Length: 87
Image 1 (cartoon, rainbow, N blue to C red):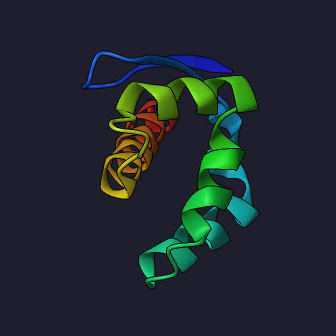
Image 2 (cartoon, rainbow, N blue to C red):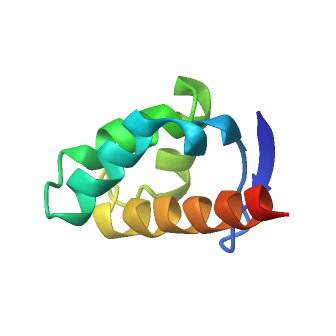
C-alpha cells in the first residue's frame, strides 16, 4: 500500500502493486475501449472499500458522485503509480 496525494487534495492509500497485475491492465483496456462498467473493477483493484468510500464521499454532490471525476482520479492514480514504478 502506498499513500498518494491527489491533485484535489485528497490522500488515499492505494494498492500500488496492482499495476504489475495483468488483470488490472485487462480492466484498464476494457475501460479504454469504452466499457464504463470496467471503472468499478479498476477502482476496486486500486482501493480498499474504506478508501473507495472516502473517495466517493469527497466528490459526492447532491447525493450523486460524478463518474467523470472518478475516471479522472483513476487516470491520475495510474500516472502517479506508473511514474513511481519507473524510478
